[in-house]
Every structure is written in structure tokens, then in C-alpha cells.
Amino acid sequence: MFETVIGLDTKFREASALGKVVQEVSPECRGACEYARLAEEVAVL
Image 1 (cartoon, rainbow, N blue to C red):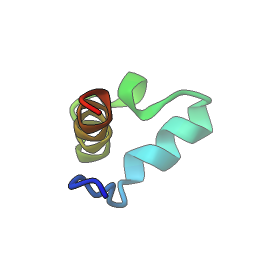
Image 2: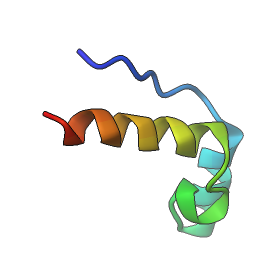
Image 3: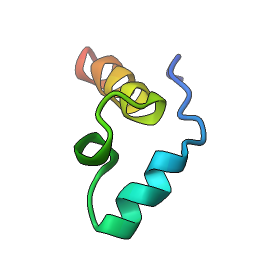
Image 4: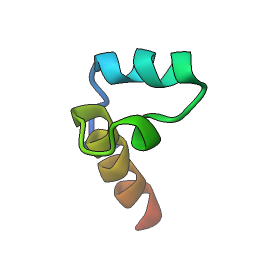
């Protein structure tokens, strides 16, 4: 199991409406940071 939890973030909806990923729309938002943390966890496996 991973430590990182991906919470709800309104930026996900905004990014989806624009056809983009959240990192493109708001790279510093909570959701983008949580996905980055999860990617780091997966990378060390």
C-alpha cells in the first residue's frame, strides 16, 4: 500500500474540461503535488 492519498481538488475538473492534465493547468495545486508524491513512491519500487 502507498502512503500518499489523492484527495479531491477542483483543479482536476478544470483540467479535464480543458482537455489537459492537472499538472499543466495548476502544477502547484494540492492534487498535482499529491500525484507527484505518488509517482515518487512508485518510482522507488
